[in-house]
Amino acid sequence: MFNIKLVSVAAACALLTACATTTNNSVSGVQRSQLLLLPSATVDKMSAQSYTQTLQDAQKKSTLNADKALLNRVTTISNRLIAQVGVFRPDATKWKWEVNVEKNDQLNAYCMPGGKIMVFSGLADKLHATDDELAAVIGHEISHALREHGRERMSQAYVQQFGLQALAAFVGGTAGNMAAQGANMGSQLLFALPNGREQEREADRMGLELAARAGYNPEAAVSLWKKMMAASKDAPPEFLSTHPSSENRIKDLQALTPKVMPLYLAAKNK
Image (tube, rainbow, N blue to C red; front, top):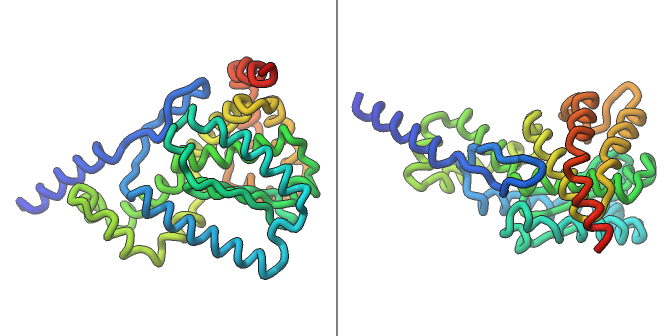
């Protein structure tokens, strides 16, 4: 009975200790506390390994950075966005950011933990996204990384998988060992589990502010989602498959746009 109580106390302490926010509060108002049991270094290592494998696979298929003009365009947009990440979390300015483009018809993009960006050519070739619209997509994905949503999803999944053992391991300082034990399922947790609605909403809001600070018109976010839905026809594109409904998303973006518009105008006038 004593051990059960001890573990329960440890679990409660773990939940209190592990709950923190990953980014500074800003105009977009994203400041939710998050469950972050796993060490960020562990998640970043998994991310880097998976990203490297993705690049190697794309190189073998000759689909990596095949369109140099698009690569330069995406890199320019990404670099302007990356230059603003310090507003949300100063340590992100020191991440080992990478930007690549894969020739792929999917309307999708992602940013892995630690700043590993991939944009699919379908956004330009099929959707004909403008620079402002590409900034909305990339800013959204960068925001997932800034908020460490991947690490949060993995932490939640580990608690579901290991229960009190995972929480006790956190208190005991052995969460890293537990993560290593679960390495086989780690990449699956990181890349297969969809973001929750609140995580997507945070990425929408922070991404809109990030794009505005970088000098990209925040109104383009709404036109982007409308293009996405028009292109989806019967099935939503991968980028939208796990996201909130387009109507709610557009309303939220439209409500926030007036708040970030001064940031955009200030950036344009520099």
